[in-house]
Length: 163
Image 1 (cartoon, rainbow, N blue to C red):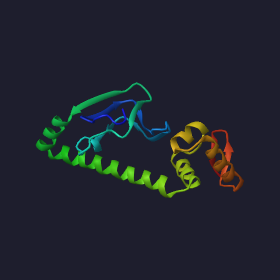
Image 2: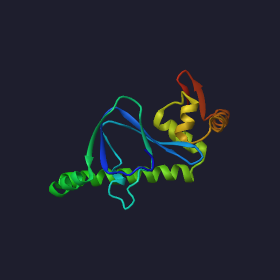
Image 3: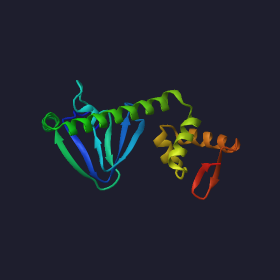
Image 4: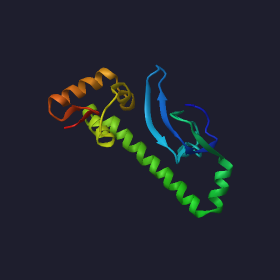
């Protein structure tokens, strides 16, 4: 849960989850969707404030391997390959968060929408896509309508796609 203490590393062995932030006003933002195999909460395990900034929600049946902080330290101290792999995971997650921050702080909704389409090929569900992009559905609809008028997007059987 968001704001809970992170005492263990979670390895997602089966299934998929999404990481969601909720503001005090109740606004929700989906940060990422993760599928097995992946590591959850790696960046927060050893922080001075080891608090989870997101809630992890299962999208399907999941299998988790929970490893205590002390066990991870012991593994890292005894095996350089585990240390290298852990540092790679931390670095990759930091890069992902930097790109996400850039996407939301520096890009317009239209450019975020284009990036979403480049990664996902189509928009089938406006409400779900708005949730993922952290905007309201009406805002997303306006941006899509504008891009359709400009000839950048078109409506297809699979949803909205790049023209």
